[in-house]
Length: 575
Image (cartoon, rainbow, N blue to C red; front, side, top):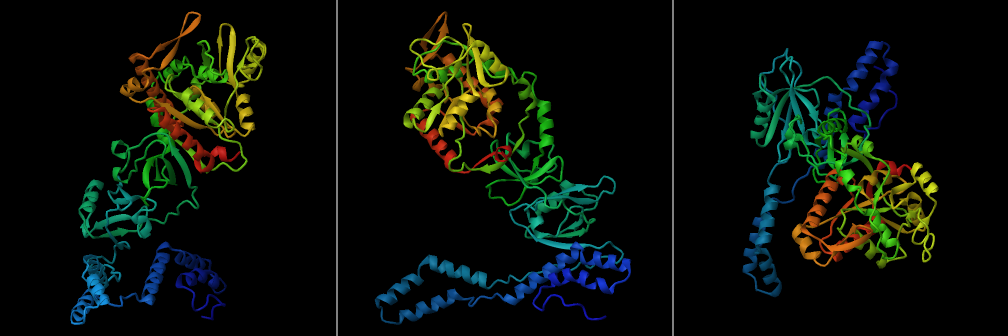
């Protein structure tokens, strides 16, 4: 054959050389069938794998790793014996003491154990009983550790063959590069698997120790998805594979908690994704239900009374707390406030996963809106007041709107924004209010523009609303950080709220009364309802046991929001 055109130099690896051969041979191969044969041969996955193994072994041999000494412990003993015959100077005494130290002796003993052991790779011998007519087989040996193999198997219902169903990203099988989806398993440690159930094979694997030898028939070449999109999602529910009867392999499942950020490694299976918990120590991906599959399951579980807690919560006094602050401590009358209707939104919103991306507020950018939610009497008003007092130049609250007539001592834009009833109704129709309500013929409400006004002054806007309003605030414009203020146990409520009063509207005037056990229990029950239905929207949960501690925790968290990177919905980063 004529000499090849100038190609890779003598120092180029065999892998690079083989990669270059097809193009080099094109001019010498006339037949289309021959060109196709060469292309198939040189692009075969098995050939590339063998070449890579060859280069790894060659590199290992070139380094010739070998210990300088494999008897350091004996040498140390000899030195000690020799020193015993010498005059005991300070240096000799110190050296003898050092060599007799148990830690030093143990270290030298470990060194010798490692140095005397051979770490050369050993390939298993080919079995003697392989028929010449049998399909090509692979003999694979993997060293078993505490880590699972990272592969699942299934039984072909037609042929009865045990095949590899999936390879877990980052697992031992994936890292080896030797086992692939579709490979047919023939033997495990010389035990035939023909006629066995997948559970029987798993039992054989679990009882095996040390190296495990597989005999497999390679499956058809399947090209995986090129550059599959790796996305991050925030889990909006808890998952435990041990409690999920639908998962194909519980051992391959990965548990997570609501709020964990997962990196989705593979979406090849429409029902079961492969994922890792971001920041977790496990390098192997695990099976988690796909978004579509989990949405279907959650939709089937949704109770008909899904919106009931929302209807109850609308009667709370979230806006009244805002109004009391904005009116410099004056008490306001009891009324009911609502945000725009959201029942349809709630029933359609099945919490499974939300795609997220890292976000850090840039210098000079507007602050994120801080939204607080919680049951009446839990102490949100006190926490908000302490934040305002701690730094009035940094924190601020909204000024509510009303349609009632301005009183003599009031100023427009201070206590309220005073607007006509007709304009208020128009703004309601145009969805300009976060929450609104009517009391004694007058409208009251908190507008979106009042939030924008605070943020435009480069201040942190503090807002407390009913939880069913959160979804209308979760936009790229506001990027809200949602804090759920939760009550402690009823015993702690009795201890810490002895002198506290709750405002109770009776007749034309408000009256205050001490908390009762019924009030405490209602607070706890309401908090539980809120957390069950809207907990997936909370970024921080604070238990208001001691006000000073809760305030310190809240302020520290808000400081981190302004300076550190957080996971937010991916749509917020594309605006």
